[in-house]
Length: 339
Picture 1 (cartoon, rainbow, N blue to C red):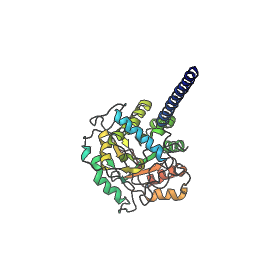
Picture 2 (picture 1 turned 90 degrees about the vertical axis):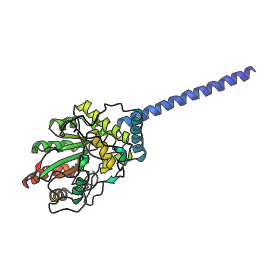
Picture 3 (picture 1 turned 180 degrees about the vertical axis):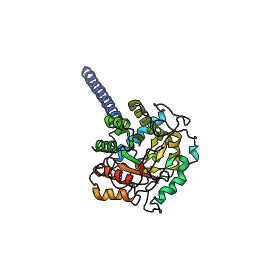
Picture 4 (picture 1 turned 45 degrees about the horizontal axis):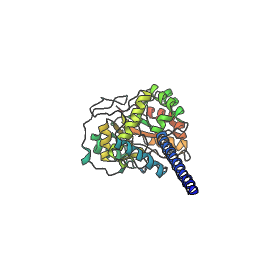
């Protein structure tokens, strides 16, 4: 009997110890998961940013599906739990891309179509060299405060998408400063956290900062619930406001994937959706276009109301930017921020 009790206690103690060990391991795993999700390294941003070549095909997405799903699941969980960030009503804000969001009517989202659309400017152009698709979509979605092409003037809205830093943004900023040329930089949550000096320089130089989503969902914003879309935008909006004293007013859809309903979500948030009327295959650092050919392509596609999308990860873009600005101005174009 004594031996039996001793074995019984030993077995019980061993089991208890095992349970404690498993509990500790679980805590460690969940803590690691929280850090992993919060730190933003769940998504490989290389190749993820949108762009369209001549046929309007969005840039190929390179991302771990499991990691992307984890990021999206976190947003859904945050939305379900209630947003821990400041809430914004559609009545707030006034105008421009310089820190105040526009007053917009609140749309009823339940009646709007959530069919996914992939934006690309296409290869058909009118007599003024404007993409026909951009004009069609502008007419169709203008009431959602979405821009697929700018006003019909010789004005260029120059924009850069910043999913991650590849060492070229400093050169781009130097060129813009030298040429006194304004631009919009669309940043992600990862970029906002990892590149404070560059973002502060953008703001100090008078450029606009736009919201490119916190997590850059691989399947696009419409793949998230309405609540999670709002949580994503607000997370980055509040982070930039708290850390850079800057209030964003512009939004660019990850991979150019949108829906009518998601346009209304962005509009109700008080943002303006900025697409593009020119983009080309510049997003892969390992497959950079020839500088001379790239510069010629940028020159050839000039048109009234141009919205140029360039990726800042591109060494080619950094090298040809000054020449492009000089050429566009020689052709009578002005570079301005969206008004």
